[in-house]
Length: 227
Image 1 (tube, rainbow, N blue to C red):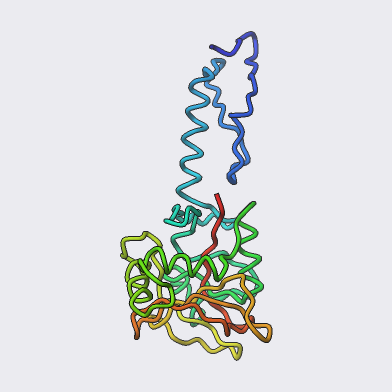
Image 2 (image 1 turned 90 degrees about the vertical axis):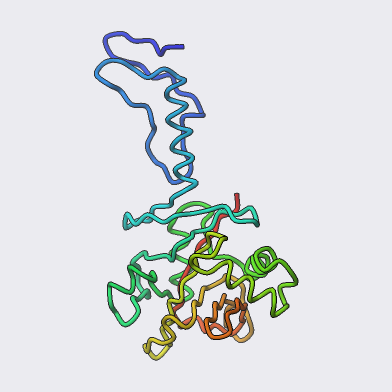
């Protein structure tokens, strides 16, 4: 079916032509005075949806790869690097932000994920445990499982998660543990106003979940979205 064409082209709107995955414009393209067929328009929309399931763009225009992991959820597969208050480059070097992403206090991490769009959020501790089980192929409390999960979820592992060892910023503003630990915030509360976090530990070659993260520390961030 061809959209009717007179002195000016008129578009026949259809709900399938609207994108919700962070895309704010419609993908009808007018060339001169000729309009797309509905089939062509729908194909353009489908291609854009596939693109949105592959990449995520933040308010700074930074593009992040995303992937549906074995838990069926859509995860960022690179560290967040959005510039907002209470986020830091390791040792205040832009080169470290480019390689490892920024380090965020817990509040700024939570805000940064929400700013990515509807549904984007920090992962829970239980979601971290599920990744351990799925990619460690066993009991998530087992040392063997934690080691296998570390190997699989790390950069160049076969999961595509690509964790990196970005270190952290302490509450006293000192930076530490670059290339030794990759710490990632979760949304799950621990005791005494602390938070759970992921710990990719190079020394023990294992992936841990820990519950003593002071909110004023700055860790790396991966956001997730339930599909």
